[in-house]
Amino acid sequence: MIFLSVNVNKVATLRNSRGGDIPDIRTAVDTCVAAGAQGITVHPREDQRHITPTDVQDIAERLAEINTRKSPTIEYNIEGDPRPDLIDMVLRTQPTQCTLVPVVAGEITSHTVWDIHKDGDTLKPIIAALKDAGIRVSLFSGTDIEQIAMTRDIGADRIELYTAPYAMAKTETEVEHEFGLLKNTALKAMDLGLGINAGHDLNLDNLPLMQELPGLLEVSIGHHLMADALYIGMEAAVKAYRQALGQQVR
Image (tube, rainbow, N blue to C red):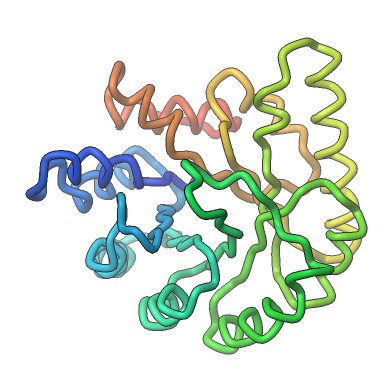
């Protein structure tokens, strides 16, 4: 089964636009879990424009409480750039997974993958520290096969394939080309013993084909799922995305 990890950043964005605690991030987590999501993702940015350090801790405590009475347990994925305060936060919080993502100043959303030639020496000890703490490590990755091999060499457990080029493809030929690149990269990652996650701009239209991606373990989806939730409700949206992944939904 391909896991669905729901990114709840946009819940915090809406809350922060007004101040206070509505919508409540913990209630959003409860709703996603009740609808069958296998994980929760957050990306606490340095400018705190959505998820805050308090949110990160609150969600960790909420999931810990849920997981005392639920099996299998709900995974917690914290993603972000490996700045010192983020890594300290991850080590304190002890999520299931940390997805390291490069950040470009002023960006609206993540759109850059790691260049292991340039960043590998910096990432290697950070990955080691996270793994020593029992945290699975995934790196935001493109479709350059050489980069994937180097990702294994610096100790990462998984890659998260950046799917925006696939999601933005318009024609059947473009979709086939972009999905082919993802497929070849996934096959290489599997050969190297790396787990495969995916995310960015995945939605109900382009998600079903992702079921055919070799070795895909998890997708992280936030913006499009939350947009659909405005129309059909969060519980229904989570279930719809689970169905698009081929999950059996009651």
